[in-house]
Length: 127
Image: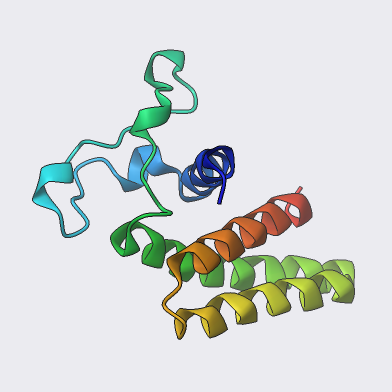
């Protein structure tokens, strides 16, 4: 995976989970990381790319994203049903199924990429 793809993916995920609220004061199993990741998308002084969590490199950061993808799909499911957008429902279900099926492989790169793909789909459909 290219470095630019990793950085873009980490940023997409950070925006999705609203990391400025998720990461502050939480250590995700690593006491050295407490208060380390603060990336505020509204404050230009806190837009250091290095401050974005390494979702691609840590199960501690990535697994909660998988859970959030499931939660967000459940939320958007209702909206898409009201719009009668069954094609989008099917696309989302397929992406979520691929994420959960990939967990068995323990291939973090694949799961990371699928989460980014799901989030991009979610952002497009949730306009």
